[in-house]
Image 1 (cartoon, rainbow, N blue to C red):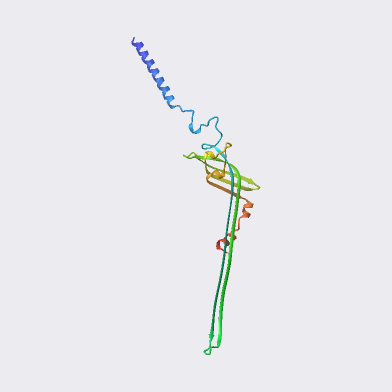
Image 2: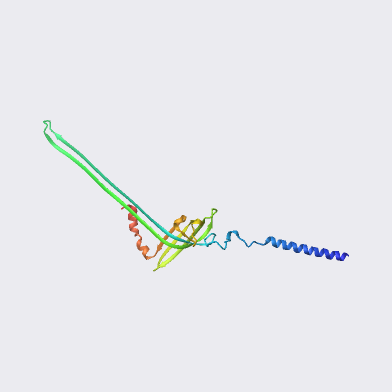
Length: 200
């Protein structure tokens, strides 16, 4: 009888231990559903999380014109005469000073940039906006063209094809730089920059 009780106690202990192990493993199991990475089967392919790619069509067109005209006229006349007691004029002196100045200047600048590049989502902000950044390098005839883009985009501004216009980016920083012989020839020489700095 004692032996049967001891076997029952052992079995009960084993069952309790087994149930305890199973409950611990169940508690440590992770869910297959990740809210931040879940995309429904019927959803579009818009970028929405960190690491997603987004195509940006850069269309920037700006122009500025500034002009100034200045004109001044000045004329001063000083005259004097010397007379004798008899009233007869002995001498006469006259000085006339005139000055004219005409100045004018006009500045006109027009910029146009068309490009398409794919950027990466770096951060999802608390208001669900996406902070994106990317770079594109293109080499043509040993001339390196580099486009850098950074900004914030609202999810509703992204089209169904996962494309957004650069005009819809907030805090956009777009840099277009060329490096090579053509760019070097387009820059002003050092002596010309010094003369311009001196105002000559």
